[in-house]
Length: 99
Length: 498
Image (cartoon, rainbow over all chains, first blue to last red; front, side, top):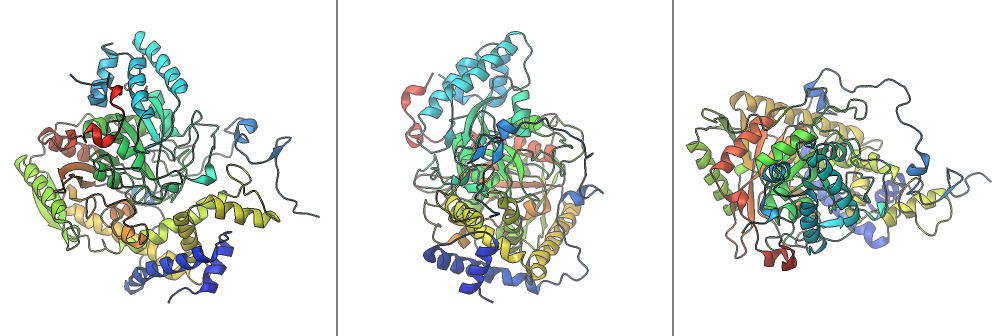
């Protein structure tokens, strides 16, 4: 099942990407090439197989560890905002979202 | 006459401790090389900062107070964030990004005494097998500058392979330490998933990403790995809660009677004849050292390609959603509203391969396709891990090629990215299972400009010591890891010798 132009447009919207026409068709062809080798996975019998999300699960009984919900880092706002594209009074600036 | 850059990490640490050489002298020697390098391996370096680190190291050395690696220079793949150097992950979207903290790996190596020489080029967000996906240009293979260095840790491999620097860090998601190590003739190890903290490692695919050292020998890797591995329980939810280990302790152990598995799927039709011959020779060397070889099967090897290229992009599409032009890095100049700003920022900031993987990931996670692709891939991922479990009942470790061929030509696979996905076939299975694996130089191709060939050793969980010992024993009886490209191939200025 090959992806069509409208599928690429839909996925790009989901991924918050804007593709140029040339880029879009190149990407469609490359993704479709890739899905040709993906199709073989549907032939594998995986009934009764539990999905493996994480290799840690193979090593320990705890799948994911949670830490105590306590403050662990000091406020470091100035350093953390050093590389932000637009900042004012310690706040991130974004285009107006509420009129 | 020997040069500082000919010393191993082990020898250099010793020479610094016994004050045969000084930390500043060492740092200057390597800075001179780095500043003149023509391979495109470095993305940033800063003489002043590195020399400041070196002077601090010398103070510790003078009071006999240094760490195990005190004064030894290292450089980091640009996916590790650093306070003192920009961290770009090879992407335009993070151009000029300065982190407010050091990655745990960077911090641990600094605590052990390592001097930071700067940051190394890599495929954008570690997505690639040739380093050609970097937004800052390709890295050249020091053995033949018309070839790729491999990827994604291509800058790390080229810099160590050309002896620009003694050691580097890399990261491996689907082979990104092992394959460039193989292409550039260096030794590299990806430990068991969870051994090394991922805190401060810019994420590509979180359930696969793992850091590791790349150096001139297994002995050097053992020393570096000992400093890098430690639990980081509060900062990395997948960090393993296990005691620290000195991986140099078991080097030089006899490998007599050790059972090494040869997976038949790793020796099929697509394997280059020079690679095959080099692996066969390596097997003979290990046989003479007393190892026993058994045939094994890893039946899902070929399926690891679609499984990996579904799971990794799925995780990437989620991880890379944080790059929105708000909190860090690049923001598009012109846009109409917030959504348009996200779209334009991401479209202009990401390269094409990264966009393609985000798209693929978003697709396999989307409604109606999740079960057929993402969940099915995760189920086969478990079957791949099970295959290894069965294989390790018959053997102590597994040996095969790292890659089907030596380094390919620059631009050779750019128009056909699928062909480079297929070339990842031998490194992906261990990544999906989370097993430790390494690349060890074991031969050279018969090209007019010979290219290095690496053998892959895959161990059972937490068996890094065993891998490193086998590699060390092999290197104690072979010379492949000591071969270096000629200076003319490195194209560094000749005045940099001390």
